[in-house]
Amino acid sequence: MNNPLPFCPACGRRQFGRRCEKSWQCGACGFLLYLNPGAAVAAIIKYQRDILFAVRAHDPQAGKLDLPGGFVDNHETAEQALQRELVEELGLQDVAAQYMASFPNTYPYAGVDYQTVDLIYVVELSERPDLQAADDVVAIRWVAIDAIPFEEIAFDSIRNALRYYTTSDFH
Image 1 (cartoon, rainbow, N blue to C red):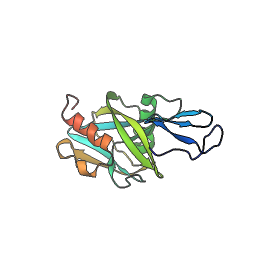
Image 2: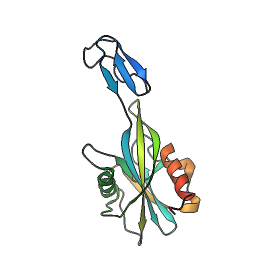
Image 3: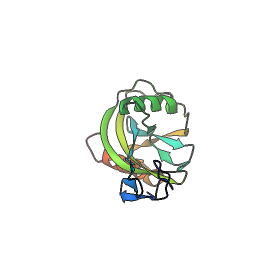
Image 4: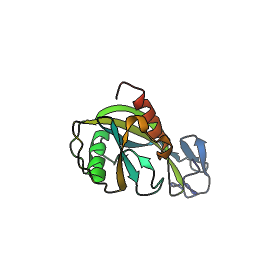
């Protein structure tokens, strides 16, 4: 990540530089800033042999496939964030979700590369619900598990999660 700020937030001097991979420090006053990964959640929603994909409405990667989900808000658990995102993006409420694994990701937005850790959950549905794309999802698409178009997926973390899922005991 490039220098997140041109000036030290404590003293205002231009002596603010990288200390290590995750921190920056002011050479004048010693102020230390840590930037750790942000948390995000996503759901592999499965009905029989199909996986539900969300088509991204906005950049980064508008028009590409993604899993439903999003960032964890302040004062929110990952589980709460997942339930909130599924309601916002699909209208899907109160689903049982099982944690699968986490994957690191880089999320480029407005010229900044944000580091995230994406927490992936699995939701197995007993019936196929009537879902409507909303919020930052422009469309939804059901895809057979053995026909996942990995080249159309927006982020490395989601590709890696789906590869893990398709080769594990989760499906």
